[in-house]
Image (cartoon, rainbow, N blue to C red; front, side, top):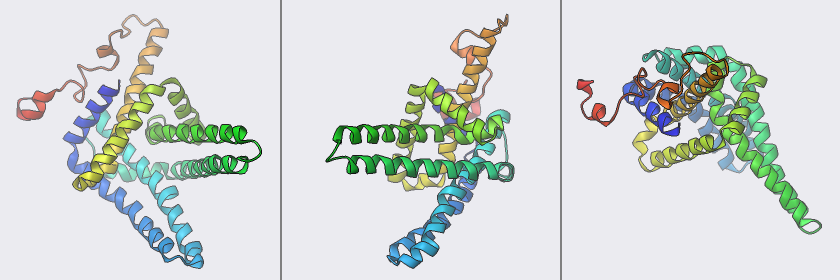
Length: 270
């Protein structure tokens, strides 16, 4: 399933690179401007500037701009996957439709990360002299909680635009997907880290970095959706239920999955 995810993500990016680069510039500017202001404020070392400018701009970048624009990108990628075509304007439509849920999810993830990170440090430090094993155990649970929250966050944006679910349903769905598909989601996270490393060492790829991350995450969600759709058909005893993996994931009829290296070398022969 991870192989199909990466294959779909590659061809989506290949076919729509221009649109994705343009959308990525919007994503980068929306996050980068407040992030730069936050960095400048924190770099001053002045407590007043950090309080008045540093904290608000940090929250604006990572609690507001990041989730809002990422969900907008996910809406655009959904259109690219569903229709094989799309427009950058779809990103703005997604922002307009889901911005409130995006900010709510951003706040919840921010609070969760801060709480778990603080707990991971606090209990290990606080109990190191009186009950070191207890402190270590609590800190370890907090670290695993951080990992789980990070894995959930990978599927949050595509879950919102695909299911049109509200915050509680989105969190419940993404948690269930991580629990039911741990190896797949961990593999997805590793691939995203790998993409990040490549973009750091090849800076020109930053032009499409954010969009590429969302394309991979959205492709992963699409594979999961097809997997569970096939499972539902099997549970319903549908006569034409899919059995082979090619049927489950609709390889033959999906233009993003039925192409190979030959199509990359000779696209005009497709």
